[in-house]
Image 1 (cartoon, rainbow, N blue to C red):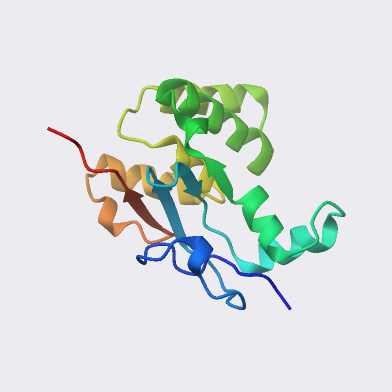
Image 2: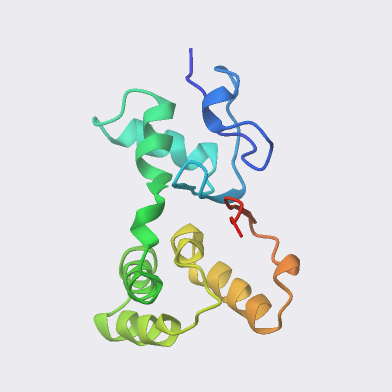
Amino acid sequence: MLNKAIADLSSTQTPESKDESSICDNKTLLISEETQKVYLPYTIEDVMKKLKSSEEYQTVQEVVDKEYTLPLSTFKMPIISRFKEAYRFMRTKENSSVYAAVDLALELMFNSNLNPAVIRAAKDLKELNIYLDCLYENEVEKFDCFKIVYKVLPKIK
């Protein structure tokens, strides 16, 4: 039987409380201060490809935990994280040259409105550009490639 998958992280349940047999696409980027984790969007097709192509994983949940769940501390220094994520994005997902990767990384590095987790979550340059256009136009709610949810801890006054 397949282990649990994070179906809709925007609900009030945590991924650990989901039904063990539920497995479906996750179209939500969840950035949670509560769990100190970032849950990236994924499709079951991608998860199954990684499960079949790698001897490292035995279950769907292992793939989700290792490939699509990151500690929030990965992005704790935003300027450096934006640079690293943009560079990694261009080199791995877009197979670009070092020059093109550095160019995008420098461009996004100082964009303080851009969360580095969004760069990691984007599947291709088209998706990232759509988000950047929405961000520039201050219409992030129009971005529909995946949902972005922030679960922040309450501030003490």
